[in-house]
Image (tube, rainbow, N blue to C red):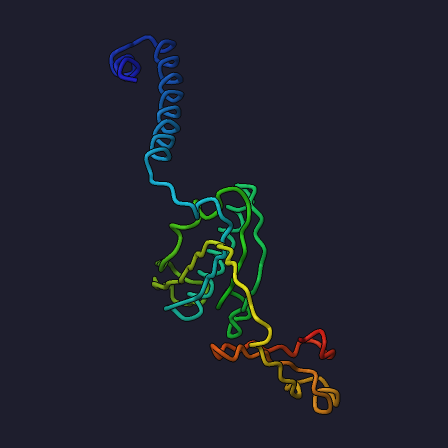
Length: 209
């Protein structure tokens, strides 16, 4: 690269300078790739790097602009996952009802090769300073969004069903007369720990159980 720089600064032959410039660009690209490989090899490896992960994105300070920023982050991670041949599955997405768009809270499951390795450093508070869509006078606003990245770590455990109590009750909410007249909702309680889980998604008690 040094020789190419000397030719570019001292040589007067335009054809030679053009060749030197082309070679310099090739060498510069190779240097960047080599640097990335070196960093990749010297960074410590952790077992979780190879795992899939769950990403949660929440709007934070900044009102509706924060929701718009959180939605931008969602789109960015979707495009990056597509570029890396990862699969990004939406688990939950709550829109900002005050502006009928944006993202108040979203969760996604991302799977592929070494997914957590590429997403683990995204955890934290992300900040943006810009003129938001909601600003009428062109003023800069600062807003932030929270990104949480968790590796998918399988846990093996044995549940003794003798320690689980199943209760049924009447479902609440919209659904007509059926909601008020049948005990279709189910609640499971792990008696030793007190941990509970409940479901009333279906009209069928067995399905909810």
